[in-house]
Image (cartoon, rainbow, N blue to C red; front, side, top):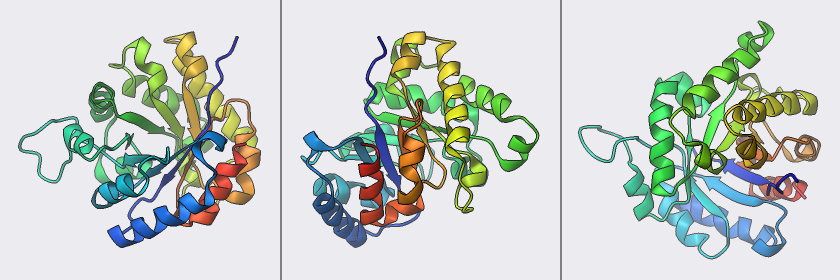
Amino acid sequence: MMPERTPYIAGNWKLWGTRAQASEYCEKLLALLPDASRRPADVGLCVPFTALDVCVEALAGSGVLVCAQNMSAEESGAYTGEISAPMLLELKVDGVVLGHSERRAYYGETDRALQEKLPVALAAGLKPILCVGETEDEREAGDMERKLRHQVGEALHEVPDERLADVVIAYEPIWAIGTGKVASPEQAQEAIAFVRALVGGRSEEAAQAIRVLYGGSAKPDNAAEILAQTDVDGALVGGASLDPEDFARIVAAAG
């Protein structure tokens, strides 16, 4: 019997959202979403550090999760500019995005660093969203599976089998982020099924329970088709999440 996986729609604001904008956004979003008991999916917002407390307060009791966009594996020390898990917990943050392709490409985030961060997030009680995915060159060279095997294997290496299902994985075809290109539903299904199979190499039980999201230019007009795929358990939404109406439509498409 396969476990029922609740879809998860997470909006990644990236570098957007002053405190005033965040407050206004949350008010609008709550007016657009059905009550938590009637939502077709878990809903989360991944917002800048400076807006976390605003969103936590605005969304309190709504069931909408609030996630940071990055986190240090260190608890304290000489790490200027970093934010630790205890700092996030103090703000009552629910989760954290780890290894987003932009963090990897622009800021040197490595698989080894993620290997350290994931267990720290889990131990703190934060729900991690691990991002993996291949570039256009890698896909065209036939290296998608090799890249995913490496990223998933490295990042989850220190996560015990019994905690694997507590990680959310977001498959980001890097060639489809902010480019206007979108993976076809078949491409999304193929890659996400492969990610699930990789987890199954560690634990078949975890593979059936773990949620794997699609993270490449999901929009209201393509979300339903992508979310209908067997192994796609939701979406990590970028640009379309900045409009509360578009984001609410994507949540509705998970039903």
